[in-house]
Image 1 (cartoon, rainbow over the protein chains, first blue to last red):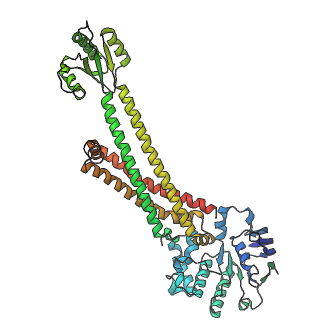
Image 2 (image 1 turned 90 degrees about the horizontal axis):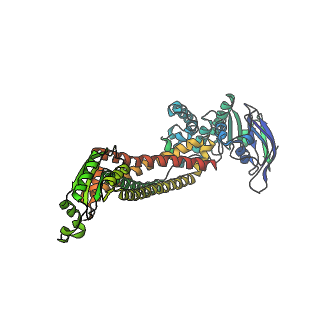
Image 3 (image 1 turned 120 degrees about the vertical axis):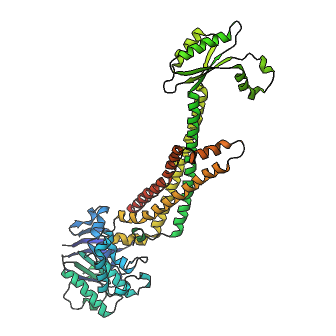
Length: 217
Length: 298
């Protein structure tokens, strides 16, 4: 089991609970969607999953570790096992597309020679071969999203979390990106995609976690 | 892409930091140079004092001063640790008084004490107490002046100056540390978003600290170099143009410090080279600790 949530609650400050008694599990190698209306708490749930927030109550277990017992120094090691595609991309504007994609590998201490060809290949695969040296401020929304996706998958994470990963791309590219996620999933990566896009979920064969007003159905 | 460019650092604040650090390093070089000048002067003066002493025989009625002086000379010459004992002739003694009393006929009539200049072996100095006892027992009206009072006053003054210089150096180091901490915090505050992303992609605090401190390493080294060159130039100018009348000793000492004796100059430059080394280390270590401390609070 990669992820286990038990009665997880989250509130920001003294505000109302945005997540209430959320309980679910993600098995290793599973592919799931997380959906729900705006403000239902999808992004908050993802933030809990990539350790950007701690729950107000309940238990979160990641890769067999209770996150409440984690020391601060253990966070980077755990985060390296998770790839995240952020809704607002979170690209570093002063780094080129290539350097943004290579960032998780650099942070993990790999030498540039060891990942150069992989990063270029991945940029080629997401259709950004010619934009490798361009900086985020001059890229379109769709191009930024593809850089963000490439950065999330470049280190072959065990868990891939994506927040609206196809929100800014045309349907054909959305399908290609979904295929990329499925390919990663075939190699054993657990995938959770938060989306509004009904076309992405269409087919109905994959599990869907539906959040409504902080409750998971 | 170099590691340091992962965290963008505005050039302007870093230039200001480098300039402020360069001024600190310049002051540190001056304080170090001043300290070395004091040390050199004290060594020179005390070595002169410890290798000499004066034996004085007061003129008293009924005493043959010349015969007593001869007795004292004989005792001193035979004493272990005494290299030479020389009688200071009356003409020479009168010359010593001229700066105070002027050249007047009154001097001729003054009953001057008989003086003996004694050169002492500094490596094996004589037992002064025993020597004084022996002289007192055999020579009437005798006393020894070892210059100890002057020496202790000089050492006290030198010690005060030494502590003053070291305090100035400590204050400079403290100010430079505060500057680097302030600048590091500014860099981190301006890059909160970048640091958040780095954390989210699994970067450890050490990785972020390395990215930040690279800039401070360069800044510290450059500031140290500029400050030291400025300090050396100041001493060189002092030595070259000379000081105003009456204080030429400072000019001579500055020249001595930088270019006179090769061994002295070598020691001087070695000490001055510590300034850029220390500035670089201080910037590096302070920036690293400040980043790690601030990141722990994130």
